[in-house]
Length: 107
Image (tube, rainbow, N blue to C red; front, top):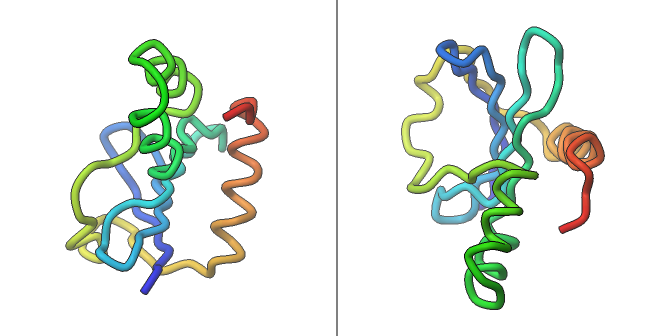
């Protein structure tokens, strides 16, 4: 079952928002700086897989510079992270749309 949640990464002062797939892996990830609410990451596993299978390393590099790097591995234990909470799908979609617009959605 797809789930949506947020955590806080104190070392970098970032809110991390995740859409996790049925197996608990990040399907989409958003990172937003807490101090100024500016998004720094809005990466999608579907886009990463497509680039891996249909493009070259340069295209992957451009994607990562524009949208950041997606977390790898299962999201187990997220609920034990600082300020962790489930969020509604609609809230994630709003944040995703805002982040992609701010980062120049061209993927």
